[in-house]
Length: 560
Picture 1 (cartoon, rainbow, N blue to C red):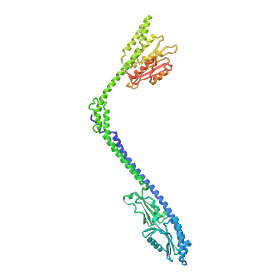
Picture 2 (cartoon, rainbow, N blue to C red):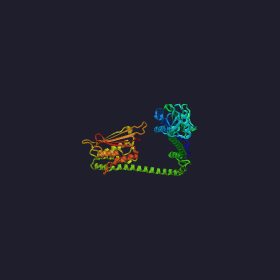
Picture 3 (tube, one colour):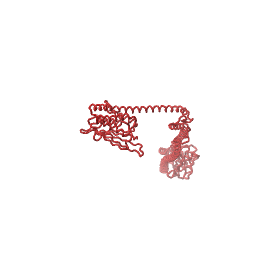
């Protein structure tokens, strides 16, 4: 069989296509989220950097302000420096310088030892350092030259270059005495060294003119410069003598986390594409041949000849090996299915025949005994009637070889049975039927109604002073305009004491109601016959009427 479905679009292909289409908005969404994450991380990093620098500027401003006050008060008001006078001598100068060093040492305890203090008295050309030196001797000589050249000039904090080094310089001159404070920019900016600015991050100190007079590194350049941003911290806003320009990595401490997130996404995306390719290859190499195999199996029932059956192509070796074995299996299953079906059909026919035969002998002996009694008593007219009813009754039994008979024939058989019973028993039985004309030729199983009528005659006890009344009504319940699915409803009722509640419960639950003495075997066999003939597409309802009589409602498919 030639496979014509290989080029059609299967659901797996559609799913792969949808997956690829879905990947596009996912990638776009990731780019948007990544950009938002990048911007947010950059913003947070800048805020953290600004917060750190602001704290640093505030602390530095307090230190510089404290040093200004200390230098001004010392050179103007401190009596220690009064020793530097024309009337003084070297011993007084030495004691005053030592006392000044002690005062400066106390000041350095609160502001830091990196601030260097120098004193110069131009009248006697006395110059000495009032604190420990933090520079080499060559730089010390240049600082000394700068201070001597500034005699008579007052300086606020200002950046300056002394030699090759950048310093902050502050100096006050009062009555030929100069007191100065010098600190290197390296020491000034050292608190900011703990901030992670990135490998190429840098800090630049700018003068009031905007010139760079100190920097901690070369700063970012080239392509990597795109990942750095510059923040400006004006000195005027912080009351500092210099402006800071900081080049820091945009992502700061969160950079690794961001790039790790990006790499994980790329790895997941690559894995998705790899898995998609693997699924596509698996579909073409495995799933498609199996789908062809499944489709071929689904078409087996429609094939009259399975000799030319081809279940799959040659792309999967294992499926090719199944082809011949499966065709042989189909032949064997077909043969066994026919055998089982025929055996089951024979068994059902035997069961139906057996159940019918259980019904036929039920009334034989009693009828013959009654006729014999009538003849013995000389009541020949009654014997003739009894013989006529009995012969018709037996003739119907012996002629019923089919599974279905017309409903009107079955009702005539019930009338013969009741006529026989009325002649046998001392009590008369009243019988009425309601059979529409359109129900006369509808078919029902033979000897079906007689089972329930016989049960009423044997077990029903009418109220005192009344005779037994049996009613049979039939009608067709329409289910569709063309008659397909119509139901025949037959209701058999009497005016006896009704069913026992235990019997009703067993019938409702589908349990066997045959007792030890064999009573109700007819109803049990009737239910079995209906199951065999209608395959459970029937309904049998047993209940009691409001007058406590027994009622059987039977609904079976209409069969003409």
